[in-house]
Structures are given as structure tokens and as C-alpha cells.
Length: 360
Image (cartoon, rainbow, N blue to C red; front, top):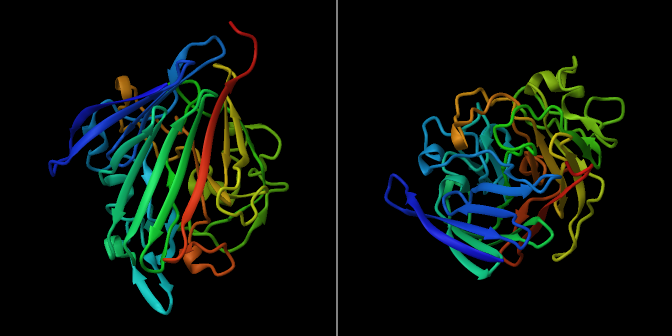
């Protein structure tokens, strides 16, 4: 295994951007960019041993810098992944106002979230890349100087492991995630509706018209959101369900059954299993986080031409964003996302790849 780096380009303000490629002995390969901490490509074998890139993205930095910006392909998200209602929250009696970049709400850290900054990189081991970013007090409206480190590790078991860590000098809120769009048949290979999905969750969070959780933790029983047993993604996605119609498909947070408040260093547990019958690829998502946002690329519209010139149409990729619940700072009943100076935010998510079926 090794980690190789090379210059990629520079941002429009002149900041140098580098690409780092991690490989293992089985031929798997992950390429990460210091801009946005973006997972640019992830090549894993199918049932016949053929390697394909299974994440959506671009061949050049310019693709990620386009205006309007692309929908967070592969990016690290912070300070707060997902939405905060009315772009404000109160902490210790002080109201903090954030950017309204999603209607009247705040989405994925604001106008210039962690997905649009250049992270400092080092390679602590041949198979790992460590990225660090200091978000200064007041950046995008958030309190405290927050130092965040995300370490990508590609293992010999074809696992891509993400370790997240943050510290602060002032009480603040934190909810980091990764926003990769996956297609296990290969990026640009078509719809993901034929993928089979299992989500180990009994409940999900219904949302209002602005995609903000209502506060209810609703049972998936008897709804199109029940993936406790395997179902094809497209099997029920267009049912006459108000929650599905509101988001144009799945774009909802699932409350994971395995989650209890864990001490730092607790082992990640299985949250999701998804498979593609065409390629035989299987992806399992393990995490220490309490929830996962399942999104089916409902707003992809063919506007973006990705790697190799492939067009990314609606539902050509799915996201599984491990995280805390959306709008937690405004929902006292939700698990706390407050980080204090005496504490360390620490979570782990693993994307584990394998295959099934007869080798062709």
C-alpha cells in the first residue's frame, strides 16, 4: 500500500490544490483532493475483478468550482451537515444567525462550508491521508475556533475508513459528514433504482416543506421508508406518499437501531448494506453516528458532465451521509451536537466493499 500525491491545480484565489491517491494490494484505489477534502474517485472490483470508479465527480478542479456549484460531490461537509431551520440557533442564551443558502434555511455549513476550503494534508502512514482545517470564530456565523481533522484510510479489506475529530476553544455545534454520490455499477452508468438497499433503522425523521424535521421519530412500519428487509431503491420511490413527493424521492434521515451514546473509540456498527446486481458489488456502511441521510440524487438534472464526459441525470447516484439529526440545535429532544472546549468530537464511518454472485 502507498499514498502518492501530485499537484492538481489552484483555486481562483491562487491556493494550491493537491491530489492524494491511496492504493492497496488488491488494486483498490481512492483519490482525495485537498480542496473540500473531496473523494474524487474510488475504484473497487466487481464480481469479475474489474475495477470501476463508483463515486460521481469531475476530472478537473474547474468542475468543482463551477457556478452554480455542483451538489457537494464527494465533499467533506461542516461545520454542520444537513439543514438548520431558519438558519439560526441559540446556544448558552446567544442567538447565532447563519447563511440562508437553502430557502430560509441553512444547509451543509453555509455559503463557504468545509466543502469549499483547502485542507492541510499529511500522510501519517502509507495507507492514510490526514486532512486538517481551522474554522475561525465567526466563520459562516458559527462560534469558536474549531479545528477539524478527517483521516481517510484504505485498508487491505477494501474498506475506506473516515475518522473525524474536532476540538474548539468555545462552545459550538458540530456535525461532520461526507457527501459522496455512489453508483455501484460505476459512475455515470445509469440509474441506481435497481440497487438493493437495506437500512438497519426502525424510524426515520419526517420533514416539513422546507425539509426540516418536524421533531417526530416515525416508525418505518408500513411505509415506503421501510428498508429493514432488502428492497430495490426504485421499488417504492414514486409511491403517492407525501414525504416522498416533498423531496422528489428519498431525502430523509434514518435513526439507526445500533446507536447508543458511545464512548470515544467505540467500534462502528453496521448501518446500511447496498448491492448492485449488474456488477455484483456490495457496499456496507458502518458508523458510530446516530443516523444516516439517504438521498437518491433527486435534484441531479443532467446539467453536470462528470468524469469521462458522462452525464449525471436524476437518480444516477445515491448518498448515505452518516451524521447527527438535521436541525438538532433547535430540537432539544434530539441528541446534542454541542461541543465544549473540554471535549473532543470523534466519529468513525467505514465504507466496506465486497462482491456476491458467480464470477463471470
